[in-house]
Image (cartoon, rainbow, N blue to C red; front, side, top):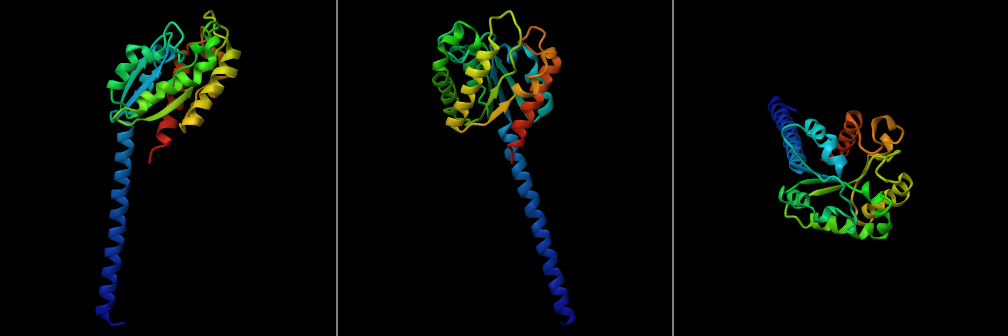
Length: 224
């Protein structure tokens, strides 16, 4: 091969390598941009554990300035429509939808384990599905995560831990499987830590941070 051909070959190889590097760079940027868009507006839906524990604020700190986390928790809220405070009919749910979320985290079900509300547990799947359908109809087309809430320990709220595990958690998994939605398991990492729940239900700072970390890992690991 003469010298001229060698030079042309070297230039061609250099141009090819440069093109591949640029392609990888821009593909990476597009993937990052897509991930950021999905986490632009993160709506945290739930009951008092969401409203008052501080976990959404810890999640905001983890996600950083490229995301806005909204706290749409309602103390006492249930999945069940046959309770004193069904989440579906709460003003916070309407605010959550106007927030135009790109990601929705739903952590409901704890109050459905209350002795009187648990009588309606057979309607849990239907009612939860209606909540989700309403979110799926949003123009923002959010990705939706269902959360298995923290465990219930001895408490003065008439919340039954056995009913929670056998009736509520199993139905959350059923809804997720039927609708093809991801589940975030907050229950398991906190199951052996009653010390994080001073009143048996609501997490302290340590518990809330574990919830935030678990949610963060789940919603960021699914991104491109």
